[in-house]
Amino acid sequence: MGRQPVCLRPNVVVEPLFNQWYAWTNLIAPAASAMYVANLHLKIMQSFIASPQIHVSALKNPAMLGGPFINYGLERVPDIKKLLEKTTSEQAHMLKFAEAVKTLDHTLLEESEGLSLERIYKKVPDVLKGFVELGYDLNHNPSARFIEGLLYRSPCYNTSSQSIGLSTVTRDDRSFVFSTPRLSREGYLNLQVPFSSGGIDTLFEMRHTPRAIEEVAEALQVGQNDYDLFSSFFTESPTRPAAREGSTYTGPDVRVRYYGHACLLIETEDTSILCDPVISYDTDFDIPHYALADLPEKIDYVVITHNHQDHCMFETLLQIRHKVNHVIVPKNNGGSLADPSMKLVLQSVGFKNVIEIDETESVEVPGGSITGLPFFGEHADLHIRTKLAYAINLKGNVAICAADSENLEPKLYERCTT
Ligand SMILES: [Fe+2]
Image (cartoon, rainbow, N blue to C red; front, side):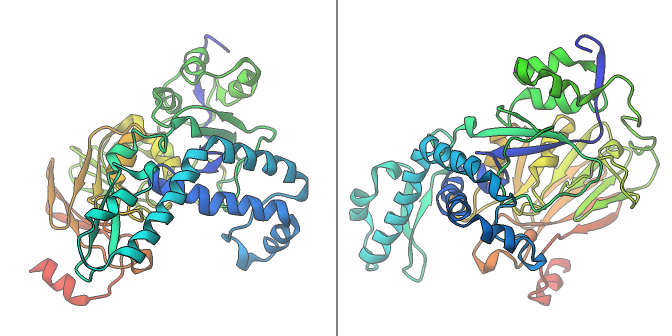
């Protein structure tokens, strides 16, 4: 099969991984990811090693699904122990960073009295020096603001922690992914490759464009031992069309297709706009649904409403990156630990033309515009700014993509329409 042009099978699943954990925005943003390693991943692994039976029992109760429990049996305790040791050793700088954040927070709370914070700079832990600016809000609450762009050039952003897991599915459902690190298992190929790798684009172009396996294997640095499993993800004779009929809209109006969850594809013959991409695999699922093969050849704009895992989903984003021209994202708070910049995250994983817009700002698109609207609610009432609803105006028709926003103040909508 080496030199023959082949296609990636439609039911090949990719899981983006960070230290073997299913990756999402906060595991890519440097400061946030350090806090997750220290305060979530290590603690879940320690708990599983100490009392695996509690995890096994908890996951028998449907009410506990989605909780901090590892979904493996007792036989995998030694593997989790190894992963814990590896993480503790390889991510020592992240653990130090997370500890320093806590120390600085404590110092600010203890020592700020509403007077100048200049003297506190001397007490900033070394690992944070030059990465934070100190300041108050208008009620004299002190906090540190991170210079996020610099953190992407620090040891807290290390792409060697990133990898992808490839496997095949027959049904498009999975158990909860965020609390169980991926360990080796039969049929699961873990490739150590940064998310920004062009090899990932080559791989997913091969869903619709045949190429030689050797070419993509080289781009993804697939080792000899993994070559047979890697080859099994490709086929010379696809059983399904790589791009289904009608996948590119050429009519005179506006076409809207619902892909599930908050994902809408809005198209005219001149432009295509995809909101909150969460796209299914092409499997024999009982419910008819649009899948990757229904997407057009090019997506002019991806718009993302907020930083939650089911709206900014890297599993889909990495698979469509090769066909996306622009990404529109909400402007953020500028360095708040709880509110990492989506623009920086997406740029770091290889997206080009990432445009950040604010409430009431618009981007002109062929035949209309995309306007940012306020998005109230969610995020436990923290002042998260990386959230935006969108009014998508095409040929005089307006679609509002407001995702998980809540109607906390009806007056807002009056003001938006007057
Ligand atoms: Fe949400």
